[in-house]
Image (tube, rainbow, N blue to C red; front, top):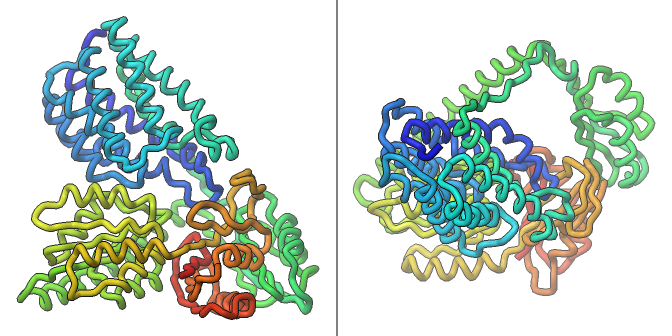
Amino acid sequence: MKTINARLLAKAFLGASTNLDNHKEWINELNVFPVPDGDTGTNMTATIASAAHAVEELGSEAAMKDICKAISSGSLRGARGNSGVILSQLFRGFCKISRDYSELNVQILCEAMQRACETAYKAVMKPKEGTILTVARAAADKALEMAAQTDDVLVFSDAVIKEAEHVLAQTPDMLPVLKQAGVVDSGGQGLVEVLKGAFIVLSGGQVEAKAVEIQTEAAYAYRLRFKVVSAMLVTGDQVSDLRHKIMKGRECQVTGNANSISVEIECDDPGQVISIAMDYGVLHQVHLHSNPNSKAVQAREGKEALTEQASSERAEEKKKESSCSESSAESTKEIAFVAVSVGEGMNDVFRQLGCDHIITGGQTMNPSTEDILSAIEKTNARNIIVLPNNKNIIMAAKQAADLTEGKRVVVIPTKTVPQGITAMINFIPDQSLEDNQNRMMEEIALVKTGQITYAVRDTLIDNKQIHQGDFMGIGDDGIISVDADLSRAFHQMIDAMVDEESSIISIYFGQDASEEDANALAEQTRQRHPQVEVEVQNGGQPVYCYVVSVE
């Protein structure tokens, strides 16, 4: 094969999208940290799916320039997470060259790959080797080499993909954290799957969407939740021992504090679980719910609930927009805020501080560039400050800022929600955008953030041995604490974060934690650090039972 025409390019791109989607969950599992939010595969798939949808809408007779425009614009606007943004920039660079030709030969493909690599590297402020960028550069370098040796597109492409796979396998040697975790870079793996999917189509094959296994029965008959109260001090060993006895590969959450153990588990024999638990104390607050037998019923009920929730959210949003339009019809604000947040408690904090638009999203659901762009467009202000509040959303926010017309957008690179809250607290309306930006940048640098969650698999990270079900305290620079006991993991994390300059600790408890337990941890923290003020707030955030800021 000597050239690729517009129709074949479109088919190859759709094949790339399908192949990435087929490997999405596997790529998610390559997440270095064993937390329940691995999302690289999901983000990259959502990014390319946005572009694939735009390509499909063009039809089979679309010209090369139109296909390239759909790929570039669709992926830029649909980009989610850092990996998705980088992928969109690779597509953007590739299309800048390809759009000017009706057919692509090896030389044009080579030039397009060079531009793709250059564009992606420029989009990252501090490029790191051992990532998707390294794999992209290796592919581009091999393209240069092969362009001098062959004019066969298939020979050229096969060699490029093999080199990308070879370098991907070496990424653990470039990033020690990958080597410790025993994985390759997830973004790089995603890029390889994109290339493989396109090559299958170019070679005359088809990429079939992965079949979804449909089960007629729920995995387990019951969901059981209860609390074990002990007259004695509950130890981490007891929590770990109970978890080990009842888990047996099932979905299970077992957490402990000073005198109780909370259990939530899916099972077929709740009596057996209760019998085991009674050896550890007296059972309280026992709740047993039967799972519907049919997955279809479960899906339908979930869909109805989501629809009802979405309708409620849309109604609330329209109400806010109506109120906003009435109050701002007379004048446009000079400076407004758009923040990414999740959890009703967290959202309330931002609203009370004067945030104009909240985008629902966070660690487990990164908003797309389009989501952020839409929020910016809805906000009636000349200048808009965007608070991503997550390191994996910053690039998408900056991409949205670049796409905005008619407004000045400043992205404060807040990596956590506490940093975003601090940024808003330090906003002074009477001062200029530049003065506020500078002060916010200074203040967020003083905020330390820690988050407590549980491990979803065994691994070794930062020289810490982690077992499935362990609690982890994750700080700004990595994992601070690991323990089978939540309380111990929490206090080890706090102890590492507090220093002689610390003055206030804010504890935000999530949807999987109770106010009672949060207050107990706060009181223990006051006793351990009497010189520091400790406050507790309901964050309502998912995944992380506690988010803590130290200032």
